[in-house]
Length: 209
Image (cartoon, rainbow, N blue to C red; front, side, top):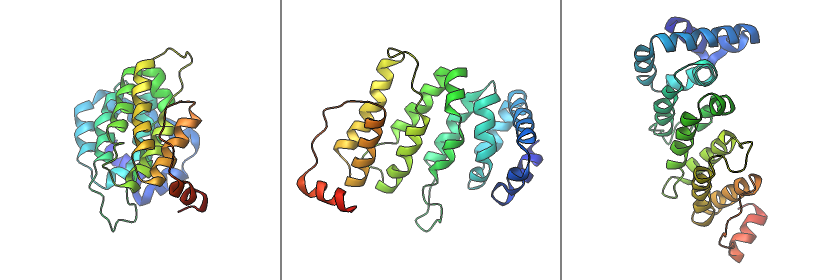
């Protein structure tokens, strides 16, 4: 299974994307079953990957979040992506978008506890001390990952904590990060008492600086 995975992920997943949808689904289910029956081996293999993890992400994140009975394995893998020592010369600087391959709707429905831990993990990295470019890459990942519960009261406290984190960035971050955070708050109908932008910030926002 590992050999098949590596072949499919080679050359930025070229072989994977040549497969039909049906064949992709079949392999994803087989890989998830492999993870479930060989959890320690699968986790050890995936965690020892460095840059190769990004080539594997399209397959593994989607398969585990949708089909595995052990979605908790996603947490250390996501942390590895978030903490990866990205080089300043790397063409894929802060390649955090690979986390979008986690199907958070399926994860929320199948394992709410793991889903909440995953959102906690994302928010733990959404802090003003991070490089603004890192935050600008991670904010859309959070926005896509957030699943709106069907009932307003569901996980209300935890959801408030997540959006309080976004509000902190909307108040205390470089302008582009502030604007991105405010857009997420608005799109998710999260009202907060935000500090008004300064006149200089409003002008810079208007002219795109």
